[in-house]
Each structure stands twice: as C-alpha cells, then as structure tokens.
Image 1 (cartoon, rainbow, N blue to C red):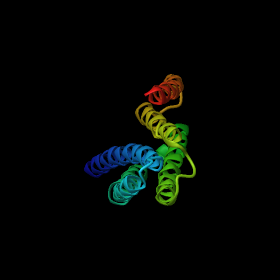
Image 2 (image 1 turned 30 degrees about the horizontal axis):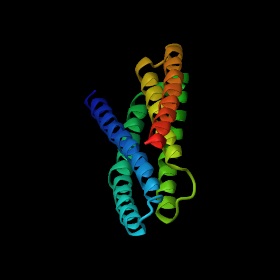
Image 3 (image 1 turned 120 degrees about the vertical axis):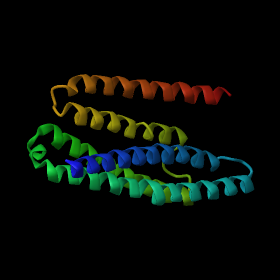
Image 4 (image 1 turned 60 degrees about the vertical axis):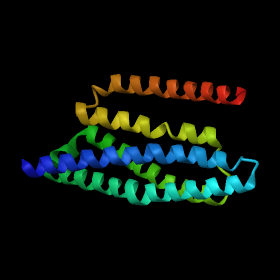
Length: 180
C-alpha cells in the first residue's frame, strides 16, 4: 500500500506541475507572438529573445520532467492495479493522456517556430490553443475520480459548456483589446 500511495503522490505532483507548465508556456506564446508585431524592431528583438529563453527553460526544466514524473507515477499505479486496464474509463483516460502528450510536443514545435518567425497562429489562436489543456484536465480528472463512463455524461456536459464559455470569453476579450 505504501508503494501505491507513493506512486499516487508522485503522479499528482507530476500532473499539477505539468499542467502549470503547459498553461504558462502557451500564455508566453501569446506574448511572444505579440512581440513580433511591435513596431520598434530593437524592442521586438529584445522581447522575443527573452520570451524564447523563458519558454525554453520552462519547457525543458519544468514541463518535460513533470510529464515524465506524471507518466512514471501513473504507469506504476497501473502496474499495481492492472485490472484497470480492463475498464473502458481507463482506455478513454489513456487516450486523453496520449492527446495531452501530443499537445506537449506540439508546444515544443510552436516554441521553435516562434523563435524564427511570426508565421502560424496569431495571438488569438494561441489564446484558444491554451484552452485545450483545460478541457483535457477536466475530462481526465473526472474519469479518474468517477472511474466510470456513466458519470462522465455530466462531465461532458460541463466540458462542452466550458468550451463554449472559453471561446466566447476569448472573442469578447479580443474585441475589447481591439477597441483599446
């Protein structure tokens, strides 16, 4: 039991740190992308260099190790509770974790892309992109807590409502920034 609790604590510490890194990194992408639009080229260059340093350190020193800790703790718990692998909720959770891992590596791609050019997503696109891990976090936690697909119906309804709310809030914020 102590081994399981240690792995569970490791898993929780890992995913809290991983998500904190993901949320902050993509927020940095928003500012980094906006730095490309600054008219003063010296200011733009200085800001872009600083954002890249911050992004690289966050991604390599915090976010990636936290992902590894999350996966080690989760894999260890699965090893000790292999019967979970027979459950549909775990299949869905692992699928969502795979999507999150893909998202993590896509952040590495965008980080490298932003270093060299402003092509790709605009700052609004990065704001929307930043909402995806929130939706994944909600779905993964609900699955882990309920350990069933039946309780997920409410979770999906909340997820869809939050998704719409995030999108509308981002649109309102964009319009407000354009006015100012």
